[in-house]
Length: 106
Image (tube, rainbow, N blue to C red; front, side, top):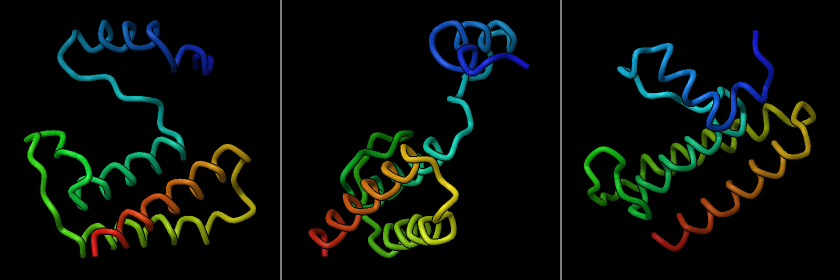
């Protein structure tokens, strides 16, 4: 198994593309922070704060956005005491920003 350095940056992207024959996109390494950021992006799209990555269209579905924010809040509760400092900070910051954006949309 490669080092973390191999999983990040240009070298990893080139290796991934070559290994897959250039047919499939490369994804960032699976990590808690990547997962949280993915959920946060989904919530932003659902609140109409960011375009849908596939269509480029803006939409608004506040009930689904709230559900996604609630999932992040559940993760916050369930992972207390088990996260590193950076993971904790990212999750708390994201939750605060999403909650503020959601309240403004209501």
